Length: 198
Figure (cartoon, rainbow, N blue to C red):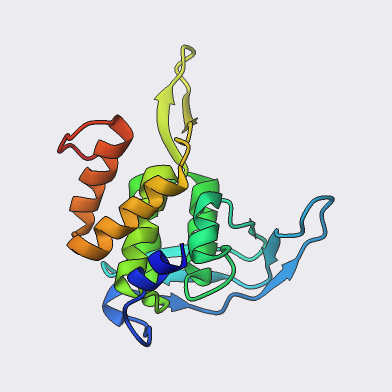
């Protein structure tokens, strides 16, 4: 696993990439005490990310995040959500995965842009994007029998560490675009050689 990480992080010194967006404010939090592992934190100040298109993804003070939007299988490869250059990206991603007010595909793409803006090297950011794109939270709007619109969670596929390792090796070798990653991940999940992106 460490060799995969070394393969993905072939950039010597990660630097933030302004073309990928910028963070607005600081992540100021208080850790919350829980019965289980204390990993939930509450934002004390507003925080936001401005994506490359100029859209501002706001996370208000009082929001609670726990890093759960990043698949746990990925922790053994890149570390837990609040460690490293992607920790600010994980705060914004968590919030929008909880709120589900935006399309899940757009939320996962924002995570990639925010990870890059935070200084995550390109191959690792692509691998992280592929992981949340394939195995992160998904949802859709559905109209119920009574005519009400509801946001419904779509079950997450189970991520096998070998799948993530193979995916990371492919990304490091092929340097795919995000659209190619979308098609590749979709084909993996469908068990086909298909070219569609969902």
